[in-house]
Amino acid sequence: MAYTITDECINCGACEPECKNEAIKEGETIYEIDPDKCTECVGWFEESKCVEVCPVDCCILDPAHKESRTQLVEKWKKLHPGETPAVT
Image (cartoon, rainbow, N blue to C red):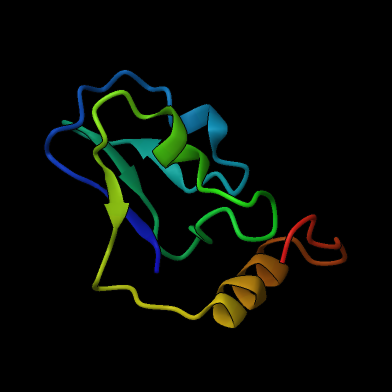
């Protein structure tokens, strides 16, 4: 599943630089996650970095974007052609 950011976001910006897929951008009122770029950090890390750094726990799994680990790895490979995932 991709992550999403809830309305509890305080716009601290801690999550944006942590996302190596560049899936997190500042929106009009809160930060937003592009589900087409979010791999739950699969390919990069064991844990999702946005969740780790969020001071208000507003990064949550988005049930509207369910994906298996295999699908997340494949998405990562499409986002980073020619690279080898650090973690699968």
